[in-house]
Length: 457
Image 1 (spheres, rainbow, N blue to C red):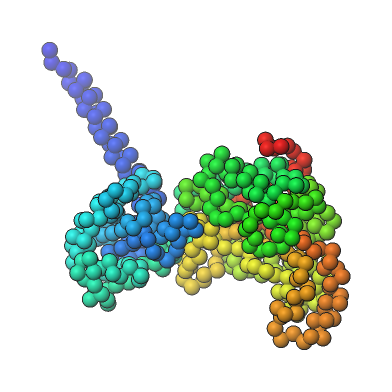
Image 2 (cartoon, rainbow, N blue to C red):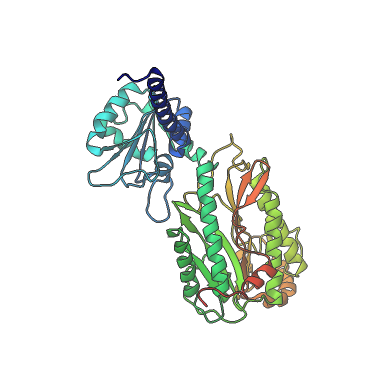
C-alpha cells in the first residue's frame, strides 16, 4: 500500500521543522552564551589576532583560589594551569588542560573545545604561523617557547590584559543577573542576622549566622573575609578577628560579601546590638546615611564617579561641622581629618573588581552596566584625638591646639562609635538601581526589624 503524497509531505515538513528548530536552538545558544559573546567582542578588539591566556598568573586574582579571573571571564572554566587559545581568524576557541584535571565549563559554552595539554604545542605552532599578531599577558611570554618561537617575533606581540580589563567594568546581562542574586542573598542574610542579634552574642556567633544564611540561600559562602566588629572594634576599618562578646548599647559594623556562581556582593550595615540606637549613635549614623544617599543620587550615566565621592566628603564634613567635630570646613586638613578610607569600587568576579580603562581616557565616567559600591563611614577610636596631630603635615601646632580645645570635649561623646553603610549600585540607562536594597538602612527600619524574632532566637 502506497503512502499518500499528502502524508509524505507532512512527514517531510515535520522533519524540516525539526531540523530548523535544532539549527535555531544552536544559533540562539551561541548568541546568548555570555562567554562566547565576550570572546567574540575580544576578537574584534584584537583585529582577529591569536589570543593566549593562562589560568595561573594573570593580572587579576580571586581572593581565595589565585585564579586568573580574565581567563574565567572568557571561558567559564576554573581549572588551574589551563591555557586558552583563540584563533581570531576562524573564531575557534580551545582550552587545554593537563591529564586528570577537570575542565568542563560551568555553563554551556558553544564554540569552546576542550583538549589535553599534550597537543597544545603543536596547535600553538600552527596558529603562530597563520596569525601575524599575538595577544598574550606579558608575564606569560615563555609559553611561546613551547612552539619554538620565544620572543623572536617581539614586534608582533601585544598585551591582552588591558583589552580584557577594559571589557569587565561594564557588566553584561548574565553578570548583572548573578551579582543581583548575590546581592539578594547578602541582604537576606543580613536581615536574618539583625533579627537574631542581641547583647552578649559573640561576634563569631553573628558571623556564623551570616555564613549559614548565605549557604541556605544558595551561596557558596563568603566571597571575602567578613567583618563583624562590635564596640571598640567597630572603629577599625578592617577589623577581622570576629571574636569578642558584644555588650549592651554598642554598635556592630558588618562588612560582608556573599558569593553566587563566582560573583560577589559587598554590603556594610551598622546595627545597635541592643536593638535601639543611642542619641550619639543616631547622630553619627544620620550623617553617614545622608552622605551616602546624596552620593548615590549622583551615580547616573555620564556623571563622574569622582563627583559622587566628592559629594560624600562634602556631606560628611557638613554633618561633622554641625556636631562641632570640625571648626572650619574650608581648611584642607580639617576636610580630611575624619576620613579613613575610600568611598567605593567596582564589584564583580572579585570584590574589588577591575576598573578600566574603559571610556577613552575618562576612567571615572559612569556607564550603564557598571556596578559600584558606595560606602561612606565615620569612626571614633578612643585615641583618635590623642594621635591626631601626629597624622597631620604642615599644620601649625597652635592651630591644632585651638582645634583640639573645641573638638575634644564633643569627641568624647562618640568614642567607640563606628558607622559604615555600603550598598551596591547598578548604573542603568535612566539612572541607577540600588541592588542591595533588600536590607534596611533607615534607623526606624533597623530598629523595627530587630524587634522581630529569628529562627536562631
